[in-house]
Length: 546
Image 1 (cartoon, helix red, strand yellow):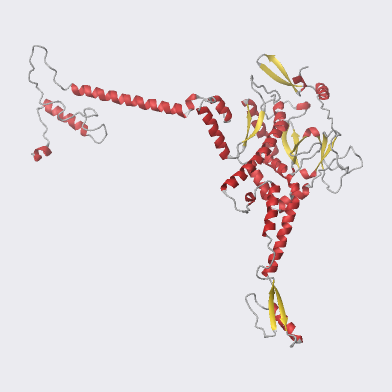
Image 2 (cartoon, rainbow, N blue to C red; image 1 turned 120 degrees about the vertical axis):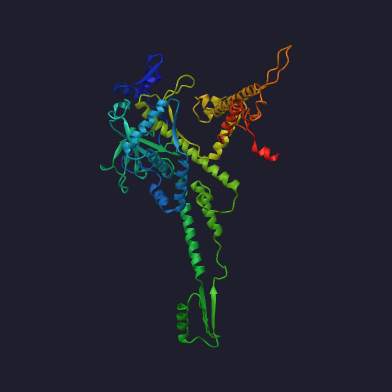
């Protein structure tokens, strides 16, 4: 049995040019699953046991997801940093790319049907996944299956003999617990609706591992959950908030200073009613008012004149710690600290773009492996075989568009320069630019421009030919010379033929061929009168000049 026969779909060569995929039956799947079962050599990290059974326990996440959620909802820096990640992540959109256009069109069609079943845009679903990944470094997606054969135009063959996927929905990450075997392989997933108990209950839904897609980022070896980067910055955020509260108290104390009121001297001690009277005057004193006191009274203001502690440096330090922990630069959060110029900010922006692109690579591969491959197999395509030279692969990729437009322009300019300098060909350049290598030469601007130039040259040649024909007609007005041995007789013509219609660079015209009025017909009438009735037209203006 070939290696390809171990897949859920078998390739059958009906002819040399026709390869189809056929679903395996249940008995073949059982035997294949035993052969293809991967045996792990290392044991998974089980951590603390929360239930009396050490093997049948659903393991909760070792990270406080509820605390992360509270921080993202209450702290402005955390919320804006997460918004910045999502904005850049989906800034330029996405597309499905692949060598087989039919497979790409099929995936778009399946997505359209899933949007109707899920009653939400597919982009909104993907955005929610990215939000879970940024917050918790984990996202749990459950597959919803159903029979859509009556509505979908293509025949769908579900894997393992079940129904095809009609949609996906997310489980709240903070409520998910995982049941694993000793080799770290997930067996089932549970949504713990009661956070106060670690024992499974009947009301908590449980899904088998084949129905759940677990996307994760920065998952340590042997662990079940990914590590959220926000877990390392929560303490810094709390310290920053405490520092801001202390500064607020300091400002409050400096804004309303403490008055030291001294009454009396050793020689003249204060009277019993003087202290009460002075306290009453201070309490009733207006903010812009003052006191008029006797010579035995002395008032001093404590902690005035910038005598307090300058905490600005401490505040900037904790702000930088929070910004670094969130993975963004201070200016991305609206902080203008320590100055900076455009060159520095551009480099910081590029560093953030590189981090977002790393997240995009992981996200795209997880979508391809966990979502696209199964949908392609259900549609009869084979995303496993990937021919390098011959044939067309059915494998499709989730591809993000370039988010750094300046970098994209520089890369594309470099590719064009390689093509102009004969380093690569046009097909290679189009492939590097992400454009379809198939092209029509008549659609290029140079080809269209050449056609226009040829039309202009042809029209110019026609104009020159017509002007030459007019010159020939003009020369026809001259009297032909007599034959050899004969003398020229006097012409009956009363003047040269172009006396009233002089010839110029446009031919025999009074002016260039421009439509003005019916003056052209006037010269024709004059010639007819001169020929038939021997009437000579006299220019009155010339006679008056004489």
